[in-house]
Length: 482
Image 1: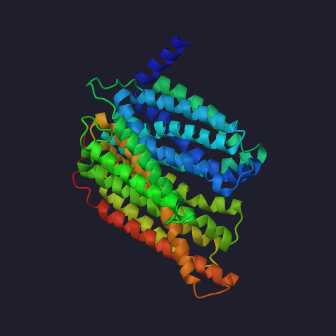
Image 2 (image 1 turned 45 degrees about the vertical axis):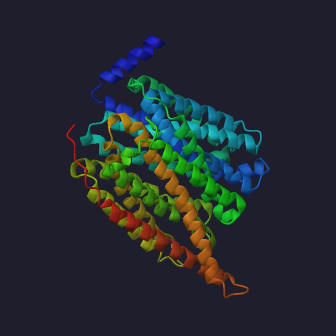
Image 3 (image 1 turned 90 degrees about the vertical axis):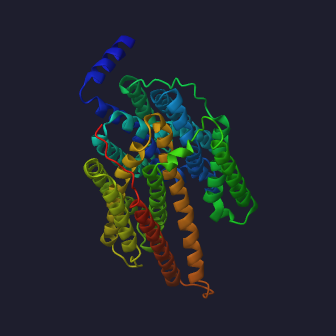
């Protein structure tokens, strides 16, 4: 068996298209982790009923997954830089697949949440290293195109998840949404073993920064826990205040430690590289703006326009579908003209989409919503591929793992902040609009809902414009010919 595997591996690595086989392998991990994020949301009401739990508990199926990934991305990026990206990436498939199998076997909600954490450990190993592996194996003249195709895979995972989840839950049961990962994970692991190049661990006697890893993991978990639950529990409640204070303190200690240890987990000197710093800041802001609408749009469609879940799902596909088309085109264009024009124009197009959405009313028609979502999808597709290429191309090869981890981290933190920001602003604005009404009628409630939604969309538009202006400052980017 080993001889067959070695023979196939030799043939693949001798192919002139070898780098594209590497991209296909990393795309399996990207698709699986993206699919799993979106497929689970559809099944939450069913899981809640079958496992006899309420909304306050079932939300941890999603929250625990997100918090774990966010706290471990730079950690596994650094581990991969030290011990080999192929090794960490391959183990990511195994751990994610094992976690998926155990999720499907979960006898109760707490076991399911625990196994979601195990899944997230595997997902963070995959997400932290996929961009690094692609960047390391593609010349700069093709890097944008490759990362653009990765963006398409992300969009396809998001697009497929809700539809596939609904079909599986309807035809089989909620456990099947986790079992679907088993063949994908096994295929991904075998592909990684056969196709990915064996990158040698660093032999310069660098050590792993355990203190920094612990401080970052617990600090980020505490801070994001507080941000994620602040609106529901109350921003002045003891658990939220404690989480904010503890998270801030631990992260301050983390930065203090990183400046003084010989081999830090995150080399803060990376942020002195302007394309890296600007790319991560604008990436963070773009996800804040994007998820402000991602969070509220389904509620607008259901509660104001009275669409059913099938109609909502079909309408929401306008965003990932246009993103899937724009991403590879933008990535390929960035290989020729660089990232500045594409990233900046993409953020302005996103802002235009948010401005359009701020004009929706209580009587908007189905087709009138599509242009706003399509503009956001085009803008996001224009922005993400060149931005990722700019970030990953700006760091030394030995730091690609931790750079990829940070790049994925800002994406996840942007999602969390975007959701918390939109919900807090929306609810506060809605209360203000109804403050002078003792017993609001249904019409008044609908107008208050839409008015609050408009406020959030305009605020998100401001965030996107701010990101666009920052993106103009990517000086220091140089197009390499290697």
